[in-house]
Length: 123
Image 1 (cartoon, rainbow, N blue to C red):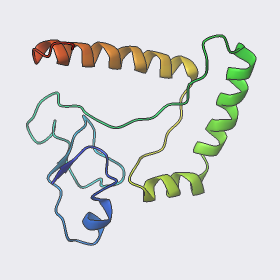
Image 2 (image 1 turned 30 degrees about the vertical axis):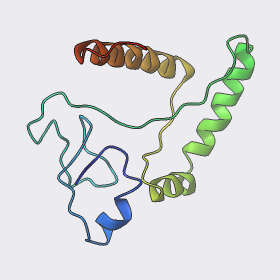
Image 3 (image 1 turned 90 degrees about the horizontal axis):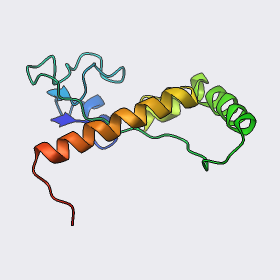
Image 4 (image 1 turned 180 degrees about the vertical axis):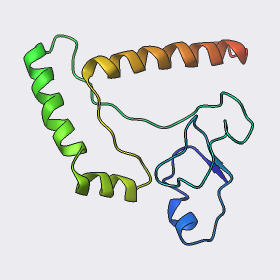
């Protein structure tokens, strides 16, 4: 079994009913640290992972964005919340609005290139 987000398979892996071969990211998952990444397993550069971010309208004042970021990071960084998110098969982490912005820009480039490389035409 190879998985990108661990939600569907994680309980089965923990129960020993499934044996994961790799995770679809560049680095190992902290949820299954003994499972190599596809990159480690020989599929060089393969990096496909689920993620979520919190967004606000573009005109939202910076003070509000800062306050929301501080409060959400407090929640995400709590041990109990990390454990609850991990139980669903996700690794929780937080970042700054600037880091999220850079990440989203990189994702747009990555997926635009993948779509072009695959020859997918917009409809």
